[in-house]
Amino acid sequence: MITSLHRIIVIGRNTLTEAVRQKVLNVLLVFALVLVASSVLVSQLATPGLDNAGLFDPQIKFVKDFGCGAIGLFGFAIALLSTAQLIPDELGKRTIYTILAKPVRRSEFLLGKFLGVVLLVVLAVTLMSSAFGLSLYWQEVRGIAYADSIYGAGFPNFPEVVDRVHRYESEAAQIQARGGNAAAQMQEIRALDEKYRQEGVDSGAAKNSVEEESDWERCKGTVEAYDRDVRQIQDQVRDPQLIEAILLIFAKLIMTTGIALLISTFATSSIFTIVTTFMIYLIGHLESVARDVWLQRGAEVTIWQSGLLGLLSLLIPDMNSFTIVDEILAGNHVPWAHAVDLIGYASVYLVVLLAVSIVIFDYREI
Image (cartoon, rainbow, N blue to C red; front, top):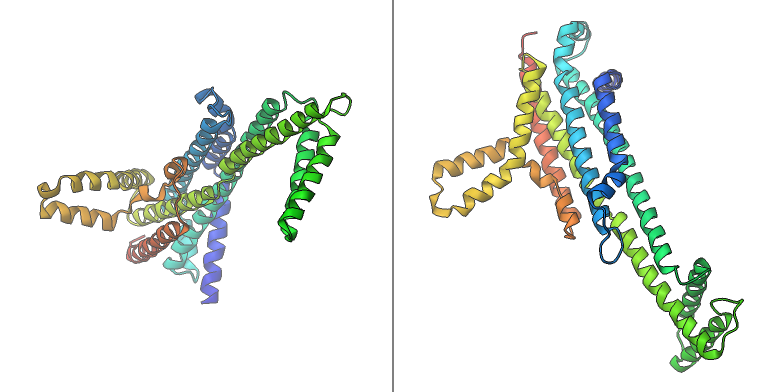
C-alpha cells in the first residue's frame, strides 16, 4: 500500500513538473494573474462614479465578481488543457510503455497523473487568489484614503483628532467595564469628557468654552461617522465568504478535471476530450435553469421528461450550484454547511469518476 502510494506521488510530482514547463499553461496563468491583479483599474473604468456614501461599494463588488470569475474561467482552462493532454501525450511520446513496463499498475499511473493536475490546479488557484487578495487590499487602501480626505477636510490634524477620540472611547469603555455605582460612573465619564474637551481640536487657537464644547462634540461625531464608514469598507473587502466561494470554485475545477480524465481514457485525441468536457461543463451550468423552466410547466412535464431530467442530474453535476459569488454580492449569507454539503457531493462524484476511469483504462488497448 505504501509502495503504491509512493509510486502515485512520484508520478504526480513528475506530471506537475512537466505541466509547469508548458508554455501555453504558463501564458494562461500569467495572463490570469495580471487580469485579476488589475481588476481595481478595470473597476474604475466599469464603475467610474462612487455611491452616495462614497465608499466605493460598486467598485468593491465589481472587483469581487471580476476576481472570482477570472479564477473560475482561467482555472477551468488550465485544468482542462492540462488534463486533456495527459494520456495522448504519453501515447504520442511512447513514454507510457516505459512506465507501464516497470512495476506500475495502470490505476497507479492514472491516479498519479490526476494528482499532478490537482497539484497544478492548487498552485494556479493559490496564485490567482493571492493576486485577488492584493487587489482587494488595494481597493481597501483607496477607500480608506478617500474617507480620510473627506472627513479630514475640516481638520488640519485629523489623524490626531481620530487618535484623541479613540483614546477617549477606550478610557470610557474601561470605566463602564469596571461596573459599580452608575452615578459614579457617569461622573467619571463627564470628567473624562471634560479632560479631552480641554485639550481642544487645535491647540494653537484660543477658544472660549462654548467653542471648545462645540469643537469636541464635532470631533466625536465626525470620528464616529469616519469609523463607521471605514468599518463598512473593511467588512466589504474582508468578507470571509469569499474564502467559501473560492473553495467551491476549486471543488468545481477538480470535478472538471475528473470529467476530462474520464473522457481521455477512451478518447483518441485531445481535441475530443476538450470539446466534450466543455460541453458537459456548459450543460452543468445550464442544468439548474432547465430544471426551473421544466418545473414551472407543471402538468405539461411528461414522465419521460422527468426521467430524462433526473438522469441528466445524476450523470452531470449542477455546476451552477458551486457559484455563490452572486449571492455574496447581493448581501445574502451563505452558510458553511451549504459549502460542506457541496464539497461532500463533489468528493463522492469524483470518487465515482476515478473508479470508472480506472476500469476503462485497465481494459483499454494501448
